[in-house]
Image (tube, rainbow, N blue to C red; front, side, top):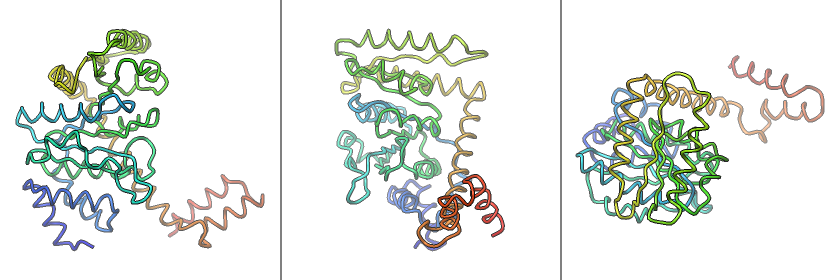
Length: 322
């Protein structure tokens, strides 16, 4: 367990740009260390500066290749870049299955880039439960841009919108993505669409489908609305990547000018607070198999003695009294 002096030292070294300190802090987050409140308190004064960009899309659209290309583009500007690549969990170790991130190894020796694979550990929504706190670590460590690449599991990955200042949705021609976008609600979460592998047949048709869906989505909107751009890329060759960066910059400027950036970050903080509070409440409930109040109430509900709403109210009151 990290001591108080250790936590302060880790934060200080992370702020100096030492990757081992950054990695250690994220490990404390992933391991749900008892020192997390102390770590969060030390990080808080240094957060709120990094741009958080979420990348999502179906498997096979080239998310990792696109992420690597964006890292190169931001580094060419002299900006420090953090990458949180959220991967499926290993059923054996609980760790990230794709932890090597082969396609991003070109940046592995760059001191201005920090890449971390995080396991979902069974968490739905395409993001690891620890991702919000890991974002805070990278933000406080002075990274200008943090790219969050999701698992790519289809309809459940829309959760990325709760974390990102800008959400980039990748599609590829010939994968039925136009239909999938409508199914998964991706139209609502995308701030920038990227049609990757645009050298393939069907790229123009994919762009047309997206334009049609966007036009349908705008009909009932009132007030100023962001016009979601569609950018074609061939990320493996670096083609179109600068256009993506320009679209990301334009969205950042728009959200700043219209107060949307502040609203998104406030919602992000609200969700984070609720998640932490609920986790603490659950810990007070205890193990449902261990003779706790929750187990006793569950038995009464199962026996028909009380209804589940009354049981829930009783449980809340029991927590409040403690």
